[in-house]
Image (tube, rainbow, N blue to C red; front, top):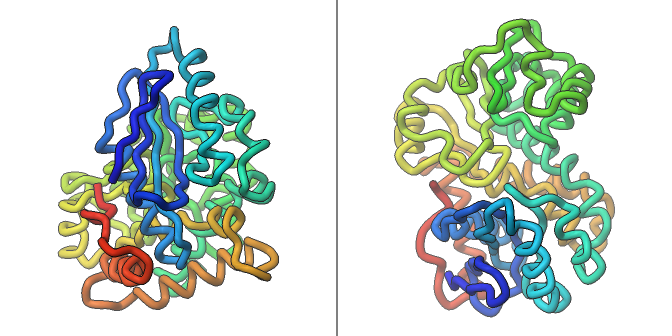
Length: 336
């Protein structure tokens, strides 16, 4: 892992693999921690390796208070433009950054337009496919979605399309439960109108945000932030399967607790991989939705049922590919 400090503003880029094309997010806050950025980069490295792309993960952090945020982002964009143009580092907006802040980089970004057009849909598709494979079918299964975000309306629709039922959702504003299941169209409308406050529209009295973790469901989708499922939260999980919708939501200690309880944890770097197939499609692959769905299902079928569990088995699979083109493996696996 190489931490490259920015020269024109207070920030850095964490490159997981030296001298390799890299991709990752850009975040901004008064203080972005290097450790957190490094973890996000590592998850992406394992994603690319799982699907045999010779690309490294990266993550940029801008330390900027609100009063200097605009100037800091402008300086950052100007500084990294040559990296983007050369394919050394391609990026998209994450916490504290809007897509419009990085819009000028699109002109030199080598990824096809489908990456941007289908990102939310492909993220949702990957999570839904992962849940479907892990449960051996979603027909009649119940699902809770923690950290309901911009890709969650499409995820809810994909779950219902496969016969599942979304019975609980949460945001930072609270948790909403309906044992009959939420209608995906209603969820999409509530999100479009209210954003994170949609829970107050869905039910009269939302409960606390953390209530969703103890939902009596078959599948718990998690992803509001890295490490959101720690060992304490893990002890209260009642779901049979945990499916990440974002990078590294489960800590190493939590994984141990969940394994002792026979709760399956799907690898985040597989379930969230959908957009990769639009940004870096296989030659002649055609529709990235078809490639993403089949490739994610194939990997999860391969790692499921192994003694190590699917997450560690997927790590072994990714590391086997990394060894084919790297002299050393990155130190540490993608666990919070």
